[in-house]
Image (cartoon, chains in turn green, purple):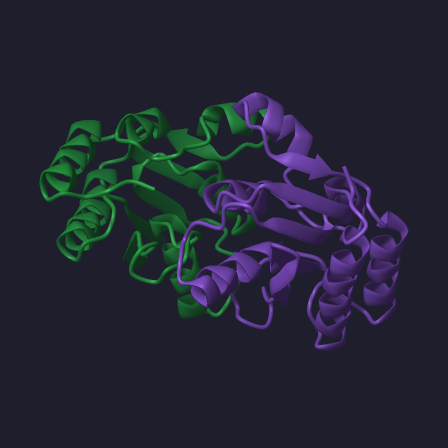
Length: 158
Length: 158
């Protein structure tokens, strides 16, 4: 279930996403919080770092692990402008993050040309028998608008 | 289908895995090749780098992208001492790697205490409608022996 602070933290993900677009990166942002505080935000850095694994969520998890000095982020929430891809979903599982809140869907990113694995978070949760909380389609219109901004600027998917 | 060079390259993954175990890391190694040449090898660095995403395959893909200066590793093969977890499987998909050869299974790693998502590579391939080639259980006994070595040295799963 979405909470009153979810909007604030999703704005954090949208803001870093916007910064990424302005820096020539693809339109994905993530924000990790715990106990009502932001641990870290990150945008996608795939092109910037020549690293196909440098999705926003993976970058945010890496930074958060180092920030707290622990590979275990139990109790944390991740806000993603777009539903985490299966790579990021599994990274979230490994980090023991408790809740995912996302805006646009994997299928939306595929519409913009990204070579997505079309396996939704709720499908993976069910298949793997997980209990992670998932809040879908949260502020989805704002996330979709960032895809439009990115495309207008001549962004290319991968 | 396994080829005559697969054994050589899997030995590369087993060797780097062994180096990781000796350095106090968990028992996972990967080797990425293309056109009959090794692009990169890596062992798991999760504890070393305080980064839950630093699985052997993710580390190897990052290094390979930077080595070739491209996020697209089309035509490459990845050798993993253990079946890539869903995070690594999806990273392999994003990198457009053509073939996976693995030794032990995800279920084996789970037996040693790792908090695995029990979604096998072939299951994910079928669900997502992919055509990536998968060679399972290749030199599995050698990969399993490394789990034993790691456990004997007091290794802890995550």
